[in-house]
Length: 549
Ligand code: FAD
Image (cartoon, rainbow, N blue to C red; front, side, top):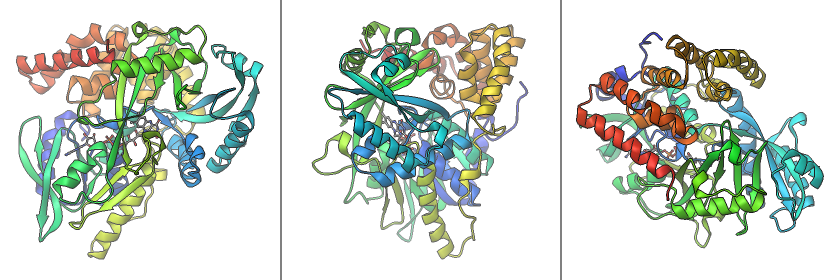
């Protein structure tokens, strides 16, 4: 693959850091999760000069640790949050249209059981309302299934106490990939985005926020980024930055931990995603994804450091027990668990409510210094959150004489340089790719898996793999090269976790390529032997944490 000179290559990191110090931006965004990335894209595409700083890797916070659904949130109907369901439900189709290869339609099966949350009538009515609020197309609307039909659709369901099921439409994605694609699209629209750059504090002029003091954590360089407006989109870290601005008053964040685990598909060979009841009154997802099935989530108050969030033995035990209770003969044990992850929901604290009862709505805090902080919300609604906050930023800028700026148009901006028009085109591409996948000596599941990750770019990767002799290792090296040249990969974990998703869904592929991956990175970044050893240790530590004993 030719070395493409673009600003999403690691080769341009220094140049981006230079630019960040040279000019005064219209907007500085702190945080490179989906919220910050969405804001950067919205603002840059309206004509604002935008900077975005992320202290670790893009999507390394909550935005790589979600259930990876673009969904309307059926359970919010139970909390009578009709407006939220309507808004987010409709947004699903918009996000799907922006990246049909990455936000894929997924049928969800909701079993109705004697002791479950929803009865037959309430499921039928609830799903009807859900589709109606979300404006779901006729052909995709919910189907109610008898007990027998439910078992035919999902033979693993425990027939004991089963009354039937509802089958309805949602979308599945890869949260980290979605975030990276939004960052890349923002860069194509002129935003300056830098990972591994921490905002240490804010910079003020006449008492008004006017930028941030930051440190490039890869080389230790400190510098100031100047900007007319600053948005704090630091997810679970939002309150830390509000403290730095001396403006953490009134409402504050409540962090709730959610863990997931991954088992090989053959250990839980589901046909559909299933949204099922747990004994304690909560609900959980089991979601098939290519060679694996993943299960989640928990919902527990978290009081530790947001920098250290992992699934523990208790989380794994809870998830396994709940799954075994619903699927006959699954008998999953700790030994089946290939991988885990856990993330923090940055919820807005509500007195007297349990984590599961707190609203997932987003909220904006405006500080006396002018800092805008945004927290809460969902992956699914990232574009709407961005529109709301950029409207506010634009209003402020135009009031001070800047602009005029364009209106929000992110509903028309595809999240790919070579976009697919719709799901049908994606399917045709996958068919076309499947022959090449075979010729490259790769398993059939790799075709759709690669398409979801890289879109049309997956064909180039397979071709590179074939030129290098074919097989999984050759493909991994092609993916790494792509990550370095076009996706701002800086560390081994950036590549393993958030670009290629191997750390979540293809653990067995990691050990055979680890040393070659480290060699390529060491050469690209001129690492010392110590740095290489530290990188190796961090991958091994992460692998160890995938399966808590
Ligand atoms: P983050 O992704 O955490 O990003 C904040 C970023 O700010 C981090 O990368 C962090 O490193 C950076 N940062 C912090 N401090 C600084 C600093 N000083 N300088 C520079 N950068 C800094 N939503 C859905 O729509 N669908 C789902 O299926 C779903 N499932 C979920 C399951 C779980 C278990 C959880 C926890 C959440 C789920 N969500 C889901 C919600 C969704 O994941 C979050 O709303 C979303 O990812 C939050 O994104 P964010 O950008 O606000 O935060």
